[in-house]
Length: 201
Image (cartoon, rainbow, N blue to C red; front, side, top):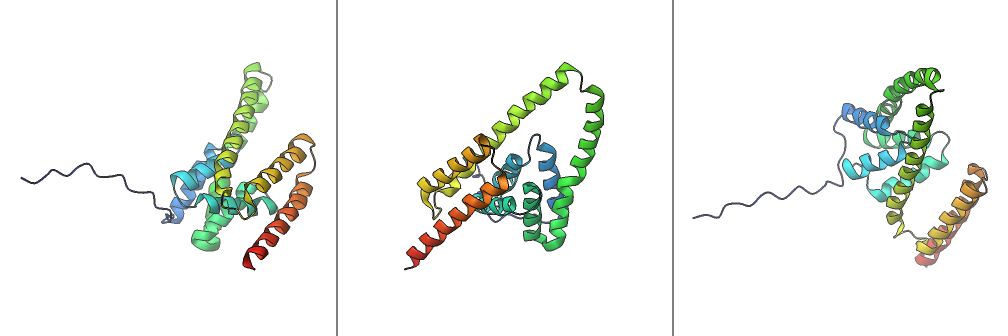
């Protein structure tokens, strides 16, 4: 009597997953954009890295770093780079439309409604509550992405120091973000260059 086969094991997540069509790419970016109340970045990390598996966590961190230093909104730059990665310039345009089309309609509709309802106490309270949730989402994303820095050439102590200095300069001292990114970014690049050169020797 043959043994009955057990339940099939769940399939492993494919780290090299990719959108099959432009429609799938457009739908993914539309979905994450419509979930991004208070900021799309936490949702983008969850959708693209954890749920869809289109991007590895370390690669997402590298793309995010590039998107932050380029002109324009970070999440828009990120969408352009990921769309271009899969379908070239057409993919970049598809991802951009997914990010902006449906949210633009929602934002314009809510803006008209907010003008009519802004004096109501419950509307002001709801907006203040969403600000707290948005801050929590950004903080949780930073914690998730921090694990990707373990193998970074700068090492954990220097990464932590640079992160703390950035938080102090922008969050406490309110220094301009561009100046902080250029200043500490140059320090980080120089340190990484030096350590990579020492490792090569």
